[in-house]
Length: 165
Image (cartoon, rainbow, N blue to C red):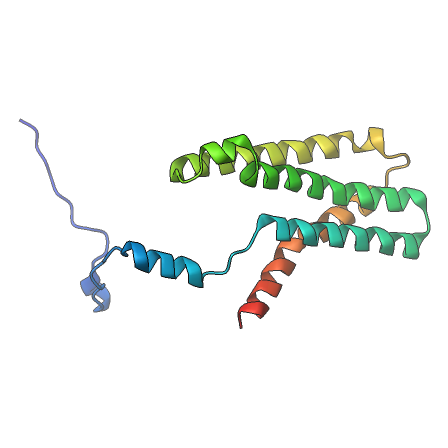
């Protein structure tokens, strides 16, 4: 016969004096109303901001340095973010795999991790091959282009927050 010992929970509601309200699942109509009230953002919006920032960073590099190697390095750094993000966005929204897994939460999450892994591998491959592709590579300019384009996520979040107010 097994000895089953029950342990008290690590924390209880009585500790802080606040009772949690009873959980009630939403009805179908309530869930539809909730979804309608939520902002519908697209991964393509973030990609648009990334492309815009890539073009601005490349133009700024041209204006400030005038050197083709710096401009190419900034552009390649920006492309090392934009192209893998575009592949991931396509994979999550338009691929046959995304259509196959539509509506299945666990499969959709697995698909997200799959495409995130593909994105990371593409970024690493692009950065590894940068010295072979860009003549007179300027690593500082490449990293600057990469970082500027990565800030598109924050820029899109900031604009989304301003629109919702």
